[in-house]
Length: 192
Image (cartoon, rainbow, N blue to C red; front, side, top):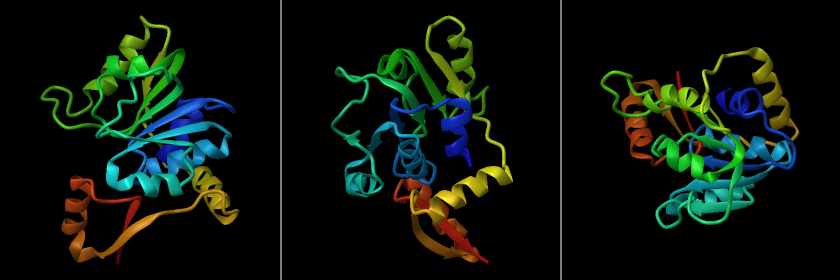
């Protein structure tokens, strides 16, 4: 579970931290915000206008609409930023971090003739050697222990899974188009 690993292993989340989740309405972000609350952090979630209510319902302390609010401008600084949306520059993300904060880039991005869509992910650890902030990326691993921990949180009602819709296997193309268009809240399930 990339969200759990991004918070605990790579992000080293701790109680009372201010956590920013950019891309909080998607499949990873919808869990990341809830999991950060499990660790008793103050969660600010970033999403589009149409998904504000959905993200609030997942328990975020604060919700920012990226179409009219900029997480990097203003007085708020974050101890941990999970960037799942893949569209902010490293300098902009650093502006939103506390001086000793941690940035975790989750996933790839479009473009990258030479880097295959991992340009920021590769530049972040290099830049991190020269700045006080920790800039890193997530290379997730599938582990049964993570699945068990998440299942226990779901069984306890602490984390709520969110499935936007279900598609039969022969409609995967349609599901992928919705994902690419950013129309999905939470996960999409494929039935076999």
